[in-house]
Image 1 (cartoon, rainbow, N blue to C red):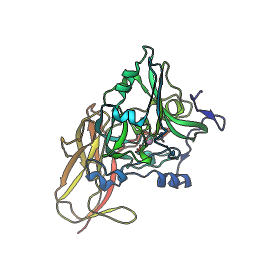
Image 2 (cartoon, rainbow, N blue to C red; image 1 turned 30 degrees about the vertical axis):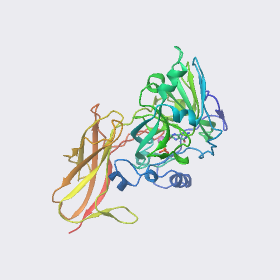
Image 3 (spheres, rainbow, N blue to C red; image 1 turned 180 degrees about the vertical axis):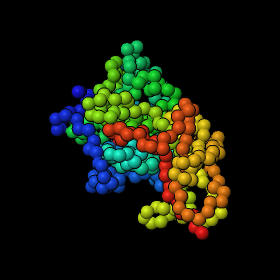
Image 4 (cartoon, rainbow, N blue to C red; image 1 turned 135 degrees about the horizontal axis):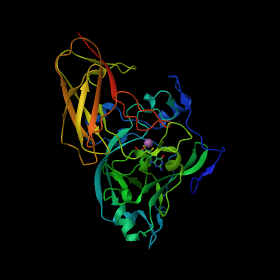
Length: 373
Ligand SMILES: Nc1nc2c(c(=O)[nH]1)N[C@H]1C(S)=C(S)[C@@H](COP(=O)(O)O)O[C@H]1N2
Ligand SMILES: [Mo]
């Protein structure tokens, strides 16, 4: 297998993730968890996630970038290849779009066996207001040649993954890249893009899992055959074993998350709530919006009640709020769950969806709660 420009084997063949059959935490899982934090679930109260609370996922290192010498190279199957400075990009028509972004690995730690790596439970999500210019405008000005099939986005970060040395690169099919809402972004929540979110420029692809939102963009290359880079042809695929070709990970599946009610035990996170009516609330999203229903269970998924889903998404690409009132719980231990259904009629499962890379597991969230007497 060939992994495109910048890709070479360091250790022979590409390696599949290791699988853990126990709950033992591996040292590398701890290191990754410190580097790549998730959203504290109480931050689901905000329609736009405050910047430092948005989740983070960086495969290699945050690269050092000098904004004065930085340029974006736009090349490949184009009539007029270009090189754009940050100033050039800022002079183009500006758009701001609220987008809910979720890591494809969200739910990985709920799989058995667990693919060892970034051990997300449910917290790899956030919603931000991204400001930039439409990729489509740039590509149209450059003149896409008729034989173009995909657009490859390359970041400035470099590392080794699965035994393969590479720049972080991801390709999008041409039709997706030409969507009006795919943006080249230089600001988030009204401030200059910070280093950890891709300074000075990143791609934002609304509705897709996070891996396509390439940070620290350096090159955009229009290609006339499907890209064979590691992140497209090996990593982000749904496979049951390393010998399977698998299918690409694309749009986000539906997911509802609740703000854990009451107050937590440190460190188990079990919740305590006072007797009497209890309002349960949260946010729900899907790469096939809108979310058409959210249901809540207080018995670990045995029975479900219908929540109220608000029509309050900050944009068509962002999450919606939902709420439900637990009227008169009696004292005791419970397991609260919530699940969303989206525009395609897809609902979250109560059992984890297993695959080799640990992707797109949208199994329902479970929150242990004690109602006090
Ligand atoms: N260049 C580059 N872009 C990247 C990544 C990366 O490691 N390098 N990680 C991707 C993944 S897997 C996710 S989930 C999102 C996370 O974006 P955030 O850290 O801004 O939340 O960025 C994507 N873009
Ligand atoms: Mo991700």
